Amino acid sequence: MSSSKLTASTVLFLTWGLLFQTSFGANPLSTFCSNPQNFTSNTPFDSNLKTLITFLTKETPITGFGQASFGQYPNQKAYGLSLCRGDVSSSDCKTCVSEATTELLKRCSYRKGAIIFYDHCFFKYWDQDFFGRIDDAHAISSWSLQNVSDPDAFNNKTKESLSRLAEEAHANPKMYAAGELKLGDHWKNMTVYGLTQCTRDLSKDDCKKCLDGAIAKLSDCCAGKISARVVRGSCNVRYENYPFFKA
Image 1 (spheres, rainbow, N blue to C red):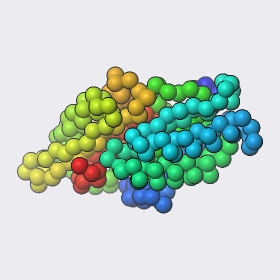
Image 2: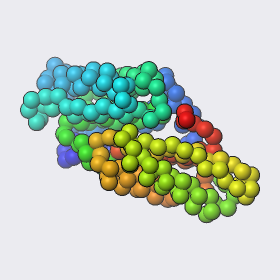
Image 3: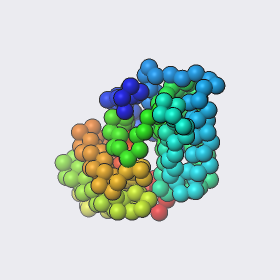
């Protein structure tokens, strides 16, 4: 992605309180806007972007994922994809994508590339073809302020659980997997709930590669934390000490 690269390598470290504001009608987890590529209203790109947003808002809730491009000429085409969390209903998916596109156009007004992350969905558009490529440049990491006892052993347990879910996700047509791991007496029989998911434009191998990278990032940012997540432009991983997804 050449000239319209977002503020790449920007990684936002959020306090855990922000994560609990991500229900519908609240602030997104994060937004990235391209810089400095802009467009003006009533231009071919403007029209193509509007068509793209309308299409993805309608199509994504059907399967939880949508991707499309509109435009005849390379410098006028708009590429986009949207993804809803694998357990989210069609109606909630539609609500989230609609909210995401509205908020994205406000926050990244007339930018030729943008991404917005919510808890239940995310939306990305660009003026260049990015389909089928791992996007690990645009990411957020967040974690609980609460530490666990015996963090090294806990980290190994969560990594094993998420790695197992990554194996399931990359083999699943929806590229999504969620599950739970019951810990022993050492952690008062706590249950860890985990989730892994990729955008479905990736190949199976690239999905696994993206998830493995995100899991490795958890070890860097969030070691010993009772809850954490890494959200990337192509995949995300998350674990909590409470059930946050629908079985």
